[in-house]
Length: 247
Length: 247
Image (tube, rainbow over all chains, first blue to last red; front, side, top):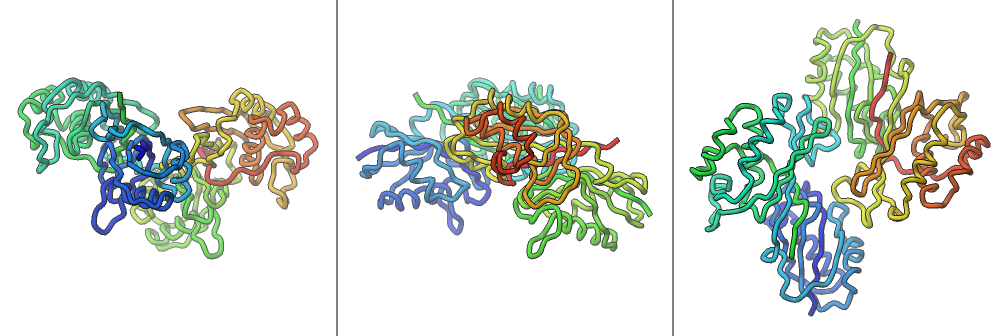
């Protein structure tokens, strides 16, 4: 028995998300089927993060237990030869049998990309969220609003309603904002993220950047823990799981 | 009668190219149909450059004559409301009746993007050309090879076989090379480009960058004007018409 860890890039546009759902193919299922094709085994593929429908990844990490004798680094080649071109295994290696992609993840980087042009872009349309009030975004205000989120907080107010996680305390190490032409890309590095947390924080800081919300009120919104006081949940297709860190 | 100039961004993946072809929709045709929908007139849309199937544009420029009374800057809004999301009109304005998008173009910038990772990318797969020898690309050699093309030359050797253009002299003002992660993006600014010229020059300088061709021989290849001595024609999907300049 061997434990194989893979790093995966995917375009989430045509999938129901990482996890298997009714009536729509999932990333997890597609890779499990690819593993079956090359090893004959139907494994349980454990992913570091359960990305939603439409969410992308450049560095999703996952692992599976197999009895296959394929050399560890050859799994990437073998899997890519049977996967669709919108899912690519970038690396494969053998790890210790007790390694678990989700439980052992120390931190993650997600990015969220906003497009602020007058019209939506044709070329990057599946990877960015176009906002029609983009010209009003004040980047200094966006950065100021982002700062309030850095550190260890109870992020209850920034979690999708209906989630049943008990511990809602998380630490955000950094939020970095890059501007290029009409694109604004926000990188979030944290030890973990609640359900929809990146999309809600992004909705909140973008609202602050256009004056729909005062960035001075953000510490209070965090303290009160009321989802209704925070900004809207931005759509999935601007979100990308960039990297997962382990010890 | 008014002459309307539009600037267009498009994802060429699903089209037969700019010009109308048998059995596949073209960008030109799609926009002409959109103009018909909003004005009732079937116009001849003149584009600055006839991009091939799979080639993209961020700044294609085109013009058409209309009797419509729609304010010039509102054409972009009206056209985008009826176009598919992979074709976007970024700007519209009225120009003098004698303006012609192709004949009046003073210069153009094309870009060609190469991906040099171990595996093709999932996310940008339609916009870049993945080469499997990417790790061998020597960027200094690539830049050195590019330099030989700058200036005014007879580019006969860098034109698709079978083209019947008489004057094959063109001027390339600059070739700029940007590297980011596994992507290499090459920008070509010139007064005009022969058929497939950017794709053949890119194939040639990339061959030089991996030692399949000696960059010292490039001036000779240009001088001899023999297509067979130059590198291969790179595929269309890495190419993008970035911008068209007018007086």
